[in-house]
Length: 276
Image (tube, rainbow, N blue to C red; front, side, top):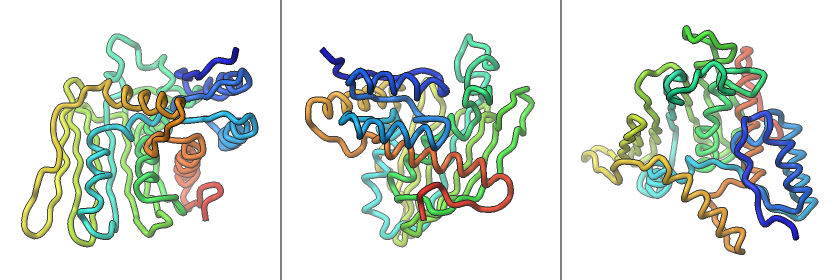
């Protein structure tokens, strides 16, 4: 009998070959982000899943974070979204306590490391909120003193087909972890901020000329977004649906933007693959 489903939770460079074996075995697949390291591999994996009649999803657990959930719910409270500022910063040597960060894939170019691919969540949730990206400008650098061969700092500007502009700041250098997103609308502004890691506290507010109101806040169980994502995957395997769970095609779209950030760092803005 064929396996019902397989979760691929390996270092980046191993996602595609293992996912292809899982699809060939007849399984539905949930593969860790990023879906692949090249656009060709990502598109081929999506096509293979479709050809075999199997379901392919990408583990974008940040879609299930309570801060992003509150942003998603709060979009109706700000009028027309105009621009956004997203950021993520965390100190790479302290991300995995007790492990030499230099041997982890995040710190190695040959294994798909670097802050752009490792933090692809920001591109993914922005696309889920504002739609496809049609233009990317960027600057990336190995700015710190970590002794790694990948970028530890990246700043990019995304132009969405919806007209929304988004600035994205990513780094492996911030000693105190910080993550968040500000969305400026025609009527009001949403602001999500998450501080720390263990514990992580978050707050989402709405502000306008009349003042500021907290929409959601609290402490984040670091396992909760993963468990919610796995519950969504279980539900679709049973025949249900979940629009928050990232499909393989959506994972390939986020990868297109991340790869465009690398290309745009050469100086000229670029158009992500397949998006016009």
